Amino acid sequence: MSTPASTAAPAGQNLLRDRDFLLFAGGQGASALGDALSKTALPLLVLALTGSGLHMGLIAMLTTLPMMLLGVPAGAWADRFDRRRMMLWADVGRAVLVGAVPLAALLDLPMLPVLYAIAVPVGALYAVFEAACLSCVPSLVGRGRLGEANSLLSIGNALGYIAGPALAGVLVTGIGGAGTLGVDALTFAVSAVSLMLIRRPLQTAREHPPAPMRRQVLEGFRFIAGHRLLRAALLYWAAITFFTAPIIICATYFIREDLGWSPGVLGSIIAVYAVGAIAGAVLASRIKEASVAVMCAGTVLGSVGLLVLSGTASLPLALGVVLLAGAGESLSAILYSTLRARLTPDELLGRVTTTAQVAAFSLKPLSVLAAGIALEATSGSLTLAVIAVSCITISVAFAVFSRRLPTAAAPEILLPPTLTPQEVVR
Image 1 (cartoon, rainbow, N blue to C red):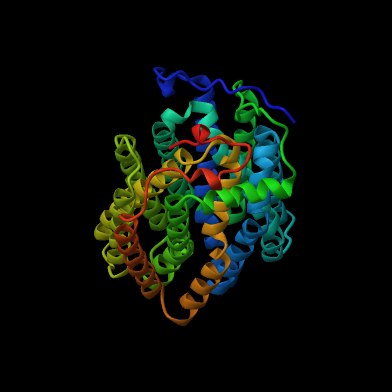
Image 2 (image 1 turned 120 degrees about the vertical axis):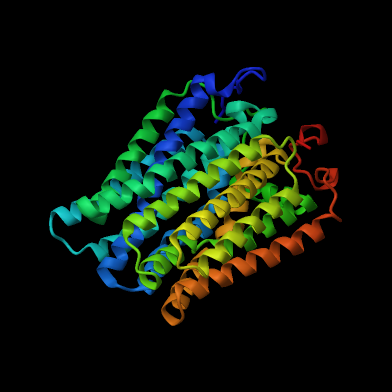
């Protein structure tokens, strides 16, 4: 199908005054609030139902499995079909599925089977949504403003994570974990409405009819294979994601089981982390060029904070190092996503983005399962410490290795046939 030409925000216009960008950011901020509620309430709910770190790991594993199977095809769909409709249907589907949890509680049905039943379809819809969402930002704001847009979106997400965990602590105490997940379902509806109100196209016009699916997928792989810096950055982030994927469940276990702190304290710690993430996003917005060295430094900074957290029983110190961790990890994530988008033309952005997602999340099911086993066998403290040390080691090694990599785009011989060297964003 053909798509209209992109009418990205004018280069001189303040994105905070751009109607379509604000709608998009507002919808994603509401979704982030719901995610923060869910990520705080769901582990607490599973822990309350089972008392088991293994069940926490199993449900997290089932949620991440669909990204392995659907990630790359979803990227091709995002380059082939209407990204707005993909996101809309994914929001509606997740609202219905997550809404089944409070409904089960209301009908006095067993909730654990419901949580297991919805894990895979919710993960599948997440894969579809992410493929479209991560691909549409360059068309929405223009490639020259990617860094600014990513920073503002990250600040919006972080604001959701400031309010969300604290609100989740109150809601879990007042209406229970299942009711809190019902509030999360409502935020998907808010995201869907915001998408319907955006006037600007969320992808550029195609000069040629889309290639067959198999060829589209191969084009994405071919572009990544020919771009040494992009390929190395994707592998680096995959390794980091493997170790950081289970942080939420590990931190929840550490705070509740190892230290015996309340759900309210857990919510406060996650909220402080989000404040740090805002600081990292503000710093990232002031960096004109995404740098591998600064990206790795951000990961190291966040990991040092996590390492100190794993060894403390002092709440003031925990809040301080979590603030540091949020700033470092936010800075690193924004620079990575900006670098990846700037190196990829819009025609391939969906496929490259979701290939990166698959690379990052393909081992996540194993990661969260291993974390669940580690929590049962050792402690939350030791598991968090291993995560932190691993991320520091990988980041230092990649920063040294990346100095030998060229920063230019892929060689012409490896570009997809429908692209010219001039179309590749350098």
